[in-house]
Structures are given as C-alpha cells and as structure tokens.
Image 1 (spheres, rainbow, N blue to C red):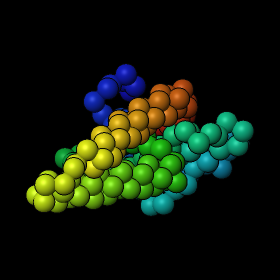
Image 2 (tube, rainbow, N blue to C red):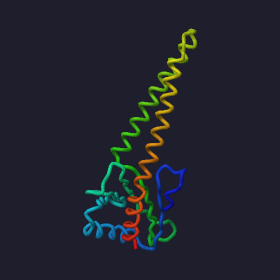
Image 3 (tube, rainbow, N blue to C red):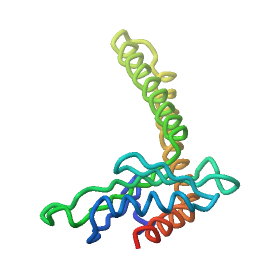
Image 4 (cartoon, rainbow, N blue to C red):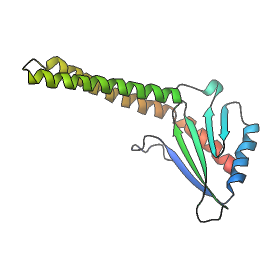
Length: 167
C-alpha cells in the first residue's frame, strides 16, 4: 500500500488468493481467537472489521474493513480480498457534521448576499462570512490530512496483521 498517494481520500488494498472464500474466512475466525490485546476483530459473514484498541488506540486510529468476495471465473476456488482503511465512525460522523454545518452557513450567506445585492444593500459582511466558511473548509481538509498522516503507522500494522492472517 502506498500511503503517500495524495489523491485518494481513503487508502485501500486488493489481493487475490487461490483459496476458497470459506477457507479464508475460517483463517480470520481462527486468528480472532488468538488475537493480540492491541487489536479487535469483528467478523460478520464475509465482512471483517479490524481495529486498534487498548492503550495504542487514539482518536485518529484507523479501522480496516476487509471484504471477502468470490473471484470470478475460478469456480469458487479463489478469493478476492478488498481492504479499505478509514477513520473511526465517530470521527467520520463528526467531520461530516462539520462539513454540513459549514456548507449550510455558506449557502445561507450566499442567499443573503444575493438578496442584499438585489436590493442595493451592502454585501461586505455577507462576503466576509462566506470567505471565513471557505477558510474553515480548507482547515477541515488540513486537519483531516494530518489525522490520516498520524494513522499511517497503525495502518501499516493493521495491514501487516491482515497479510499474516491471509498467508
């Protein structure tokens, strides 16, 4: 996985292995019984959630979602594994909430600006608020990038553990 990729918002990896999907799933089930106390694994059907817990967990700790899919064309003798890294659900929800609040304020003041302009009223204060909202959006982006960079080491740990399970 290339963590220096600046275009992708959420890092991911793919792997194809020549084992039946049930065999691969059973590897994860077996590993979850002997897992280190630093990790938490939840398995539901062919979806696995893999996270950091305990003393190593921080607000920026990543989560790894692994999907097991039958690889097409191999008569159910191969598995396609998709791994997707993301933030904690609470952190993700909080950032989305902030984006909606900022967007709502921006759109509201955009309407105020248009109305004030249409009736020949001063628009400076409305434009200032809109500029502040654009700056806030930029700051949210910078904070999100910094949060992701903080989690690179733990992302690599999670991926290494996943690769160890798959074999």
